[in-house]
Image (tube, rainbow, N blue to C red; front, top):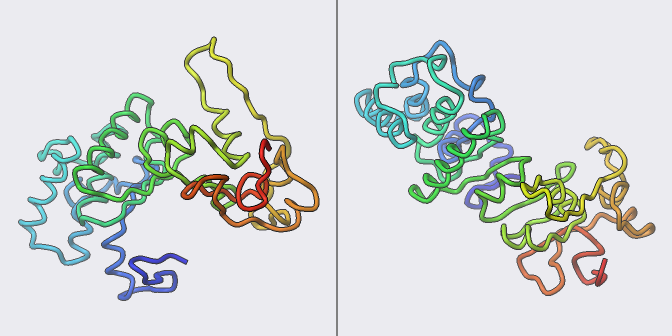
Length: 262
Protein backbone atom coordinates (compact mmCIF):
# COMPACT_ATOMS: atom_id res chain seq x y z
CA UNK A 1 0.00 0.00 0.00
CA UNK A 2 1.31 3.44 -1.01
CA UNK A 3 -0.23 6.51 0.59
CA UNK A 4 0.23 10.21 -0.15
CA UNK A 5 -1.23 12.52 2.50
CA UNK A 6 -3.40 9.64 3.70
CA UNK A 7 -4.71 8.70 0.24
CA UNK A 8 -4.06 5.14 -0.89
CA UNK A 9 -2.86 5.45 -4.50
CA UNK A 10 -2.20 1.75 -5.05
CA UNK A 11 -5.33 1.11 -7.08
CA UNK A 12 -5.79 4.55 -8.63
CA UNK A 13 -5.40 4.93 -12.38
CA UNK A 14 -5.86 7.42 -15.19
CA UNK A 15 -7.45 10.70 -14.22
CA UNK A 16 -7.47 9.84 -10.50
CA UNK A 17 -3.74 9.19 -10.42
CA UNK A 18 -2.61 12.15 -12.54
CA UNK A 19 -2.50 14.76 -9.71
CA UNK A 20 -0.31 12.44 -7.65
CA UNK A 21 2.07 11.83 -10.56
CA UNK A 22 2.80 15.54 -10.59
CA UNK A 23 3.77 15.41 -6.91
CA UNK A 24 6.05 12.35 -7.19
CA UNK A 25 8.82 12.23 -9.79
CA UNK A 26 11.71 9.84 -10.47
CA UNK A 27 15.38 10.05 -11.42
CA UNK A 28 16.25 6.91 -13.35
CA UNK A 29 19.34 4.76 -12.95
CA UNK A 30 20.52 4.81 -16.55
CA UNK A 31 21.20 8.31 -17.93
CA UNK A 32 21.73 6.81 -21.39
CA UNK A 33 18.51 4.82 -21.72
CA UNK A 34 16.15 7.19 -19.90
CA UNK A 35 16.38 10.10 -22.38
CA UNK A 36 14.70 9.99 -25.80
CA UNK A 37 17.57 10.25 -28.33
CA UNK A 38 15.20 11.75 -30.93
CA UNK A 39 14.17 14.70 -28.74
CA UNK A 40 16.02 17.84 -27.85
CA UNK A 41 16.81 18.52 -24.21
CA UNK A 42 14.24 21.33 -23.93
CA UNK A 43 11.21 19.20 -24.87
CA UNK A 44 12.53 16.32 -22.72
CA UNK A 45 12.64 18.50 -19.61
CA UNK A 46 9.38 20.35 -20.32
CA UNK A 47 7.31 17.26 -21.15
CA UNK A 48 5.86 17.10 -17.64
CA UNK A 49 4.76 20.72 -17.81
CA UNK A 50 3.03 20.06 -21.13
CA UNK A 51 1.27 16.90 -19.95
CA UNK A 52 -0.05 18.65 -16.83
CA UNK A 53 -0.99 21.83 -18.66
CA UNK A 54 1.38 24.08 -16.73
CA UNK A 55 2.06 27.43 -18.42
CA UNK A 56 2.11 28.37 -22.09
CA UNK A 57 4.95 27.64 -24.52
CA UNK A 58 6.99 30.72 -23.58
CA UNK A 59 6.59 30.09 -19.85
CA UNK A 60 7.64 26.47 -20.25
CA UNK A 61 10.68 27.49 -22.30
CA UNK A 62 11.72 29.95 -19.59
CA UNK A 63 11.21 27.34 -16.88
CA UNK A 64 13.45 24.89 -18.78
CA UNK A 65 16.23 27.48 -18.91
CA UNK A 66 15.94 28.04 -15.15
CA UNK A 67 16.12 24.30 -14.45
CA UNK A 68 19.14 23.79 -16.71
CA UNK A 69 21.04 26.51 -14.87
CA UNK A 70 19.89 25.12 -11.52
CA UNK A 71 21.48 21.73 -12.26
CA UNK A 72 24.72 23.26 -13.56
CA UNK A 73 24.09 23.30 -17.31
CA UNK A 74 23.69 26.19 -19.76
CA UNK A 75 20.36 27.46 -21.05
CA UNK A 76 21.68 27.04 -24.61
CA UNK A 77 21.82 23.27 -24.03
CA UNK A 78 18.03 23.15 -24.43
CA UNK A 79 18.43 22.89 -28.22
CA UNK A 80 20.90 20.00 -28.14
CA UNK A 81 20.31 16.24 -28.22
CA UNK A 82 21.19 13.70 -25.49
CA UNK A 83 24.04 12.12 -27.49
CA UNK A 84 25.93 15.42 -27.28
CA UNK A 85 26.33 15.11 -23.50
CA UNK A 86 28.43 13.02 -21.14
CA UNK A 87 26.87 10.57 -18.69
CA UNK A 88 27.05 13.03 -15.80
CA UNK A 89 25.48 15.78 -17.90
CA UNK A 90 22.70 13.44 -19.01
CA UNK A 91 21.92 12.63 -15.41
CA UNK A 92 21.72 16.36 -14.67
CA UNK A 93 19.16 16.59 -17.48
CA UNK A 94 17.24 13.74 -15.85
CA UNK A 95 17.33 15.60 -12.52
CA UNK A 96 16.04 18.78 -14.19
CA UNK A 97 13.20 16.79 -15.77
CA UNK A 98 12.25 15.33 -12.37
CA UNK A 99 12.28 18.70 -10.61
CA UNK A 100 10.56 20.92 -13.16
CA UNK A 101 7.08 20.12 -11.79
CA UNK A 102 8.22 21.09 -8.26
CA UNK A 103 7.33 17.69 -6.79
CA UNK A 104 6.95 16.91 -3.09
CA UNK A 105 8.89 13.65 -3.43
CA UNK A 106 11.62 12.53 -5.82
CA UNK A 107 12.54 8.84 -6.05
CA UNK A 108 16.21 8.51 -7.04
CA UNK A 109 16.69 4.96 -8.31
CA UNK A 110 20.44 4.23 -8.19
CA UNK A 111 21.07 7.62 -9.83
CA UNK A 112 24.88 7.42 -9.78
CA UNK A 113 25.60 3.70 -10.20
CA UNK A 114 26.14 4.03 -13.98
CA UNK A 115 28.55 6.97 -13.63
CA UNK A 116 32.30 7.21 -13.11
CA UNK A 117 33.36 7.66 -9.48
CA UNK A 118 34.51 11.26 -9.97
CA UNK A 119 31.21 12.14 -11.63
CA UNK A 120 29.25 10.34 -8.91
CA UNK A 121 30.54 12.81 -6.32
CA UNK A 122 29.46 15.77 -8.47
CA UNK A 123 25.94 14.43 -8.92
CA UNK A 124 25.59 13.52 -5.24
CA UNK A 125 26.71 16.98 -4.15
CA UNK A 126 24.23 18.49 -6.60
CA UNK A 127 21.39 16.41 -5.15
CA UNK A 128 22.31 17.48 -1.61
CA UNK A 129 22.36 21.14 -2.66
CA UNK A 130 18.99 20.84 -4.41
CA UNK A 131 17.52 18.98 -1.47
CA UNK A 132 18.43 21.85 0.84
CA UNK A 133 17.60 24.66 -1.60
CA UNK A 134 14.20 23.30 -2.68
CA UNK A 135 13.22 21.71 0.66
CA UNK A 136 12.92 18.45 -1.24
CA UNK A 137 12.08 15.00 0.09
CA UNK A 138 14.40 12.53 -1.62
CA UNK A 139 13.95 8.75 -1.53
CA UNK A 140 17.39 7.51 -2.50
CA UNK A 141 17.72 3.85 -3.54
CA UNK A 142 21.25 2.44 -3.61
CA UNK A 143 23.45 -0.57 -2.94
CA UNK A 144 26.56 1.50 -2.24
CA UNK A 145 26.48 2.14 1.51
CA UNK A 146 29.22 4.76 1.29
CA UNK A 147 26.95 6.76 -1.02
CA UNK A 148 23.99 6.19 1.32
CA UNK A 149 25.99 7.51 4.28
CA UNK A 150 26.94 10.63 2.34
CA UNK A 151 23.47 11.67 1.23
CA UNK A 152 20.91 10.23 3.67
CA UNK A 153 19.31 11.52 6.87
CA UNK A 154 17.46 8.28 7.62
CA UNK A 155 18.26 4.84 6.24
CA UNK A 156 16.07 1.77 5.69
CA UNK A 157 17.82 -1.55 5.01
CA UNK A 158 15.87 -4.10 2.98
CA UNK A 159 16.25 -7.86 2.53
CA UNK A 160 14.06 -9.85 0.12
CA UNK A 161 11.79 -6.85 -0.33
CA UNK A 162 11.17 -6.22 3.38
CA UNK A 163 12.59 -3.48 5.59
CA UNK A 164 14.72 -5.15 8.28
CA UNK A 165 16.13 -2.02 9.93
CA UNK A 166 15.38 1.69 9.90
CA UNK A 167 16.91 4.57 11.85
CA UNK A 168 18.86 7.77 11.39
CA UNK A 169 22.14 7.60 9.48
CA UNK A 170 24.48 8.06 12.44
CA UNK A 171 22.81 5.38 14.55
CA UNK A 172 22.82 2.85 11.71
CA UNK A 173 26.51 3.18 10.94
CA UNK A 174 27.60 3.41 14.60
CA UNK A 175 25.33 0.71 16.05
CA UNK A 176 23.67 -1.60 13.50
CA UNK A 177 21.14 -3.96 15.08
CA UNK A 178 20.18 -6.39 12.35
CA UNK A 179 22.79 -9.06 11.40
CA UNK A 180 22.20 -8.34 7.69
CA UNK A 181 23.04 -4.67 8.24
CA UNK A 182 26.22 -5.69 10.05
CA UNK A 183 27.27 -7.85 7.11
CA UNK A 184 26.59 -5.03 4.63
CA UNK A 185 28.59 -2.50 6.63
CA UNK A 186 31.50 -4.90 7.01
CA UNK A 187 31.79 -5.05 3.21
CA UNK A 188 32.42 -1.30 2.80
CA UNK A 189 36.00 -0.81 1.52
CA UNK A 190 38.36 1.04 3.88
CA UNK A 191 41.10 3.24 2.42
CA UNK A 192 43.55 2.46 5.25
CA UNK A 193 45.18 -0.98 4.70
CA UNK A 194 46.51 -1.05 8.26
CA UNK A 195 43.15 -0.46 9.89
CA UNK A 196 41.77 -3.68 11.40
CA UNK A 197 38.40 -4.81 10.13
CA UNK A 198 36.11 -7.74 10.65
CA UNK A 199 34.41 -9.02 7.51
CA UNK A 200 31.21 -10.99 7.95
CA UNK A 201 30.81 -13.34 5.01
CA UNK A 202 27.24 -14.58 4.68
CA UNK A 203 26.84 -18.26 3.90
CA UNK A 204 24.28 -19.88 1.64
CA UNK A 205 22.29 -18.65 -1.33
CA UNK A 206 19.79 -15.80 -1.42
CA UNK A 207 16.28 -17.35 -1.26
CA UNK A 208 13.69 -16.56 -3.89
CA UNK A 209 11.45 -13.61 -2.94
CA UNK A 210 8.57 -15.61 -4.45
CA UNK A 211 9.16 -18.46 -2.02
CA UNK A 212 10.87 -17.04 1.08
CA UNK A 213 11.82 -19.28 4.01
CA UNK A 214 9.45 -19.45 6.99
CA UNK A 215 9.92 -17.14 9.92
CA UNK A 216 12.52 -14.42 9.51
CA UNK A 217 13.47 -14.43 5.82
CA UNK A 218 17.11 -13.96 6.75
CA UNK A 219 17.31 -16.89 9.17
CA UNK A 220 18.93 -19.47 6.77
CA UNK A 221 21.95 -17.15 6.35
CA UNK A 222 21.93 -15.47 9.77
CA UNK A 223 24.94 -16.23 12.03
CA UNK A 224 22.92 -15.73 15.24
CA UNK A 225 19.60 -17.38 14.24
CA UNK A 226 17.93 -19.52 16.93
CA UNK A 227 16.07 -22.66 15.79
CA UNK A 228 12.51 -22.78 17.04
CA UNK A 229 12.28 -18.99 17.09
CA UNK A 230 13.75 -17.30 14.04
CA UNK A 231 12.54 -19.99 11.64
CA UNK A 232 8.99 -20.07 13.03
CA UNK A 233 7.63 -16.53 13.22
CA UNK A 234 8.58 -13.47 11.18
CA UNK A 235 9.45 -10.49 13.41
CA UNK A 236 8.02 -7.03 12.90
CA UNK A 237 10.10 -3.88 13.16
CA UNK A 238 10.74 -3.34 16.89
CA UNK A 239 12.84 -0.82 18.84
CA UNK A 240 16.26 -1.92 20.01
CA UNK A 241 17.19 -1.94 23.72
CA UNK A 242 17.04 1.61 25.02
CA UNK A 243 16.09 2.87 21.57
CA UNK A 244 12.95 4.66 20.40
CA UNK A 245 13.47 5.46 16.74
CA UNK A 246 15.96 2.69 15.91
CA UNK A 247 13.86 -0.25 14.69
CA UNK A 248 14.95 -3.70 13.57
CA UNK A 249 13.10 -6.85 12.51
CA UNK A 250 15.12 -9.25 14.67
CA UNK A 251 13.88 -11.34 17.59
CA UNK A 252 17.32 -11.39 19.22
CA UNK A 253 18.35 -7.76 18.77
CA UNK A 254 15.09 -5.81 19.20
CA UNK A 255 11.80 -5.94 21.07
CA UNK A 256 11.01 -7.42 24.46
CA UNK A 257 12.82 -10.68 23.64
CA UNK A 258 16.13 -8.99 22.78
CA UNK A 259 19.08 -10.85 24.26
CA UNK A 260 22.02 -8.82 25.56
CA UNK A 261 25.36 -9.54 23.94
CA UNK A 262 23.94 -11.36 20.92
